[in-house]
Length: 92
Image (tube, rainbow, N blue to C red):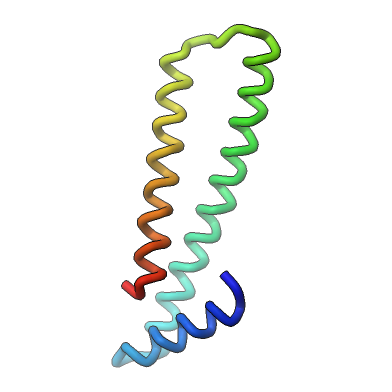
């Protein structure tokens, strides 16, 4: 999110609220949580790339059901972050 976008969104949140300071603090808290989630997902993506590289290099995929469950959990986490981003973007 750009600085201008952040300022615009926090200004709108403050304007919509009876308690502008609390609205800005809530919005800031949501944005910080989303940024932290984004960093964690990026780390997971890097780890998955390393895992895929090693598995493809060695030619063996041990416990494919575990790998499939892991990927399902990552996809679910990405979906959760997408929903949260949509809520923040729509001003909820």
